[in-house]
Structures are given as structure tokens and as C-alpha cells.
Image (cartoon, rainbow, N blue to C red):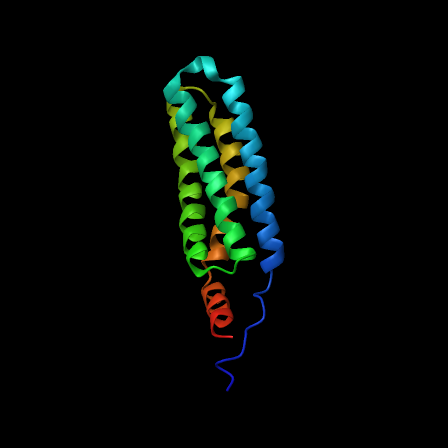
Length: 141
């Protein structure tokens, strides 16, 4: 029966796994550096962009490990949710900084483009149904 066969990895699985790890490690370094650079600005300016970013980056790394190494279906679901939360967080935090007057419109646009050019394709890629069917085929095999 062909339905019991194990599917091959989806195209780009390894590349996009690596891209998630690299992207999140870079963000983690930036957020942790931000904790050192901006502690005098106040707790609300510290927690929202930096601490939340650290938590989300760690959560993405853990979920990605669950998908790539453990082939966990529940980790895939968490990865999808957390990546989309990260996309929304980037937008909300940048708007918040713009409203606070802590960033200029040109910086806002540049930061949004850089972040979202990476974050959105990663979120879209991991949302594809092929990943769920691939992991399901591993469970059947």
C-alpha cells in the first residue's frame, strides 16, 4: 500500500530549518544586547520589545528542534503559532516604538522590511500542509 509509505522530506526542509535557527539566534543576540543597552529607559520599554523577544526566540528554537530532530507533530503546531506571533509582534513593537517617538519613520520602515522579509516567508513555509502530512507519514511508518 502506498498510503503506509514514508514521505520524503518536504522541499527546503533542511534549508528552512537552518534559516529558523539562524534567524532566531541572531534575534536572541540582538534582544539580549538590548537588555544591556537600554536598561535605564524603564521597565515597560525593556520588557515589551526585549524580554518578549527573548522568550519568543527561545520558544521558536525549542519548537524547531522538536520538528527537525524529534519529528514531533505537536512541535510543528507550536512552531506555526509562535512564528506567526513573532510576525505580529514585530509589527506591533515597531508601531509602538514609532508612536513613542523612539524611532523615525525611515528607521521604522527599514526595520519592518528587514524583519518581515525573513519572518513572513519562514512562517508561511512552516504553515504549509505538506509538513503535517510528512510528520504523519513518519508516525505511520
